[in-house]
Length: 198
Image: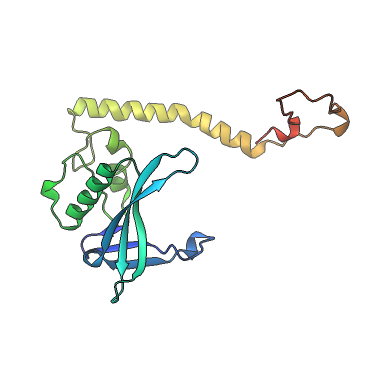
């Protein structure tokens, strides 16, 4: 997380072995005191490459003290450089130079309407500061009316699926009913029915 009000980077400590969420420990350091590196990652199986942006902090002797990956799976070096420039301008409060279509989500706890405003739907529809689509009012009412009808129609199916999963039993075959293995077919691996349910 980048907290630009305090100019700090807050990130999970990668050196801590996390078994549960409550075991997470966080590192905090100043953005201005960080160096940044773009790393090339070669995928061994395919030989394809991606890039990632890493924030690095050094001690007084210039040795690496800690680092954290800010962005990963960046397709090209140019995209990685653009991502760094975007983050640099964001942390330097140079928002006027950023594209207006970029939605910056605030940190901290969001209330219900703020969560709706910054939800995935804002990536599909251009919304205003009030969280509503920038359309004429009749279209807004029609859109949310259709959305409510679709949710009402889907609810029984979702509820039925949940009840079916909750009340169902795992089907088991009597071993005497399973036919004995015959001659193997070349290139075909036979999986018993009882193991075919994932």
